[in-house]
Length: 329
Image 1: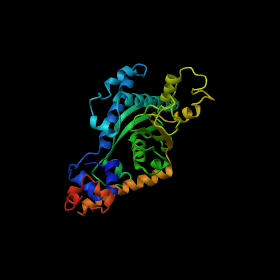
Image 2: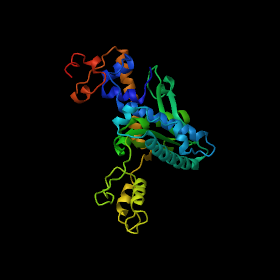
Image 3: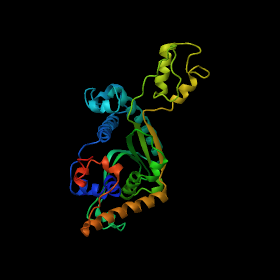
Image 4: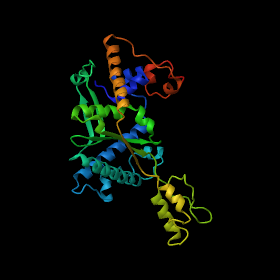
């Protein structure tokens, strides 16, 4: 057994669920399609990154994407669930955008010295290292960083998030994951906290759609449509060709819509340097949570059930926890 951000968050949300997963090792009733999609998509980005690492110029051509992207007949349930009609179209845009962000991050870190890039880096703090911070346990603390870009004195920690909503400042302020990874990088690589940057590459689980054509033959100018600026401009040019008015140039009929849709991207990068005060508060909470779990086990106390109709009803472990209710639910 080991402690991780996922296991500690599970404990704080529901002690009984923690016991079912991490102590009793029971299997879930079902696996969320969101988790399945995330695992598959993380693998795609990892393999695409490895291809870039192996390329002499750090760039892979779109023709090589087939090496890492699922075939169109794979993961059909996920395609249906998230309304994705082509893995190639979806992942080509994502891979290209993520690669661009990565190059920018590497350029920024290179100002501090020679850069090392690590992908899906497995980190572990031993019980002895945790003891130095006052935590008595015989279990290690582990984590996996999606992307770590570092020099000898600085680091950027990036987590890939495939989601249906954009990350906000509260995700930085209230999510322990990036702070926990910073804690581990700080200890293992002796990098000063004020030189650690953390961030998300936030990737929507949906495809861009072709802009709608209206009855009069023009394109919709709705600024809320799920379309990229690039796709919109291509559609305008396909319909109107070199029309001096119906174009995306300043003053053109579609210009304002085009500018707004330029903000739509296959992925979004958000980074910030550590909030040191938040870091210390969150890490103290993490270490205290480990101590609480250790105390429960040492003193043979019970992992309490949670009684919350919303989260319990959708819980994939309720058949073990509240077995007398599963037939009703």
